[in-house]
Length: 408
Ligand SMILES: Cc1cc2nc3c(=O)[nH]c(=O)nc-3n(C[C@H](O)[C@H](O)[C@H](O)COP(=O)(O)OP(=O)(O)OC[C@H]3O[C@@H](n4cnc5c(N)ncnc54)[C@H](O)[C@@H]3O)c2cc1C
Image (cartoon, rainbow, N blue to C red):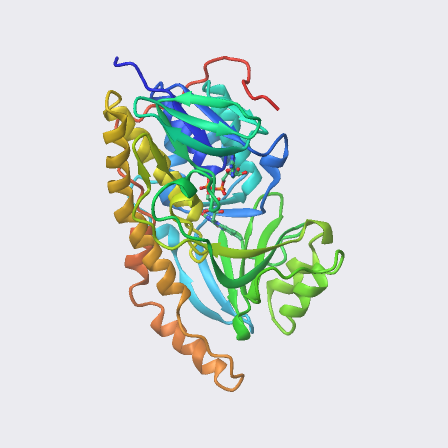
């Protein structure tokens, strides 16, 4: 076997960890650097929809049994009005590709924990509590610069350090993150709050108030409620739940129940940003993946799913040409750009759909949406949920029986 180049990864989010795991399966030495420490890495965020395209990748990487206990299968999606009247119903499970795994909902921390444990078991070297500050491509190797003044040396560097990537900042085409205009509140309710099982329950009200909720195990529901607001706003501690209940005042159905059933201290507020399309994802021995390359608005819940797709395609390209990693990185970028560009187009199309706030016209708008939304929906969801082409030989990373290498 050709000697495998050493891969450095900046960032242990969903994208960086999935890449590390897939690369270990092919036998690449992997060293991953994450700025967060200890349990902070596993507890950020609330819940995620991992649609069939990405759930299939995770299953092929051997995570299926590990995640089964903590995930809920997605059968359908629905968008309800503020009167709890269906606007759109999407039988997403029937729009999955033959042989693929069903989409699932789960707590973000569960996914990160499962990936972290699998990476450790597969022998990835994970260093927590180290922030990447930049990099230097020296032609025949690359150096990752770290906040303690040290440098890590490898053959390839993956910038998987999220929307404010320090690696992306040193590449051409860098732009500032763009505010979507939406601030969102998120939480995990201690009760199901009436959200139907196996359903991703979205809701849309007037004045741009909308959100979603889905089961994350043990009758808990992860939810978001977003609305238009200037960036940078803050709420007084202890007032977030009241604030959210105010936003959904008058909403019928589950939202009020699951927000009321959420401990105040678990509610977080996040301004939503995305990145403009960048043509340059990498150069030389460096490439980007996940939000570092293509952070998109949260509409359709595909950001983490696309990071997972990136990871496995990247690992496959490096495994196909280990002696020429620079060409392998360019090949990965070419393959992924077409797919990600299309997913973003869907996100902006769905996110830009017209709104009607006038209370007299709302019932008509809700009925019209129900009719018009059917058009093209099946085609879009089938294509969104199509997994990347996975090599028949995609190896399941094995448990090397090594003690965890994580430095905390
Ligand atoms: C409210 C909300 C809901 C969402 N819902 C969904 C959903 O349902 N489904 C879905 O697919 N996507 C969803 N997304 C999008 C998803 O969260 C992101 O697209 C995904 O997390 C991107 O993964 P990533 O690994 O590229 O980046 P990140 O998850 O941001 O991970 C980056 C990692 O790098 C670390 N890091 C950052 N800077 C440095 C540095 N300088 N040095 C070292 N480490 C660093 C960070 O601590 C982090 O661990 C949602 C996003 C939001 C905000």
